[in-house]
Image (cartoon, rainbow, N blue to C red):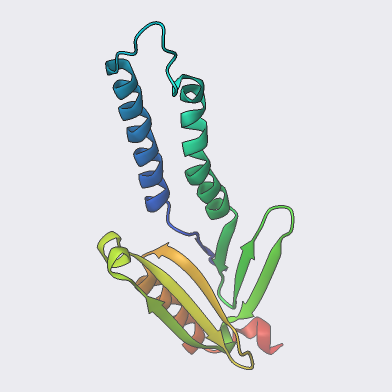
Length: 156
């Protein structure tokens, strides 16, 4: 039984870390160039040590949320897991998959990522995995597995 583990892309999170780093460096350079008179305290001075910490909260939160979401594609089922303390796991039989949709916005197409939606028989809700790499390739793989029909293990 071969497994394929899918996680949301890290491309945008890495870009977030880069933007935060550039902002911190630019603000440090700007603070070094501004000459405050010695008798006037700088209004920004108490905030300077906290600037990197405050700015890093956004990409770190996204990074953690990203790493705590995964979908495992097996020969006969899909397993979608999300969460750390409160964990949600949804298992879908491949034979019940009726529709696999890839949605890509313009920015996502530029970076080769997209949202993958899976609809199953007998359920009204869709399972959507946001911002994954190579979404069309994964959708095609799921469609191939679903068209093979039930495995020998499911029939017995």
